[in-house]
Length: 113
Image 1 (cartoon, rainbow, N blue to C red):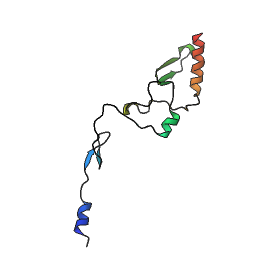
Image 2: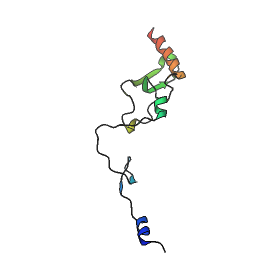
Image 3: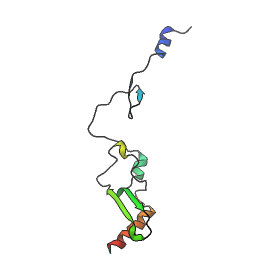
Image 4: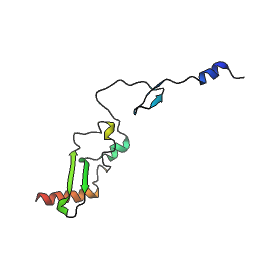
C-alpha cells in the first residue's frame, strides 16, 4: 500500500498566477509592474535584424515612378519596444541588401535626379 503522505503530496494543487497573455501558469511569481517593456533578442533576431526602414510598404505599381516607399526610420529603434511590435521587422541579412532594396535604391537615385 502506498504511503498516505506521498499520495497526499501528489494531489496538492500548485500555486497559480497569471502568465504573459493572462493565462494561468503554474509555479510562477507575479512580476513587479515596470513602466518600460524590455524584450530579449535571440541570436536569430540579432543576425537577421533589418536596418534602415521598418514597416516599409513596397508596392509594385504600373509605372516605375509610382513606387511608394513608406516607413519609419529604424535607427532609434534598437529592438522592438513591446510585444505588439513582434514580427514587424522584415527579415534580411544585415550585411546583404535584399533584391527589392537594390531596385528601390535605383528608383530613389533616379527620382532624385
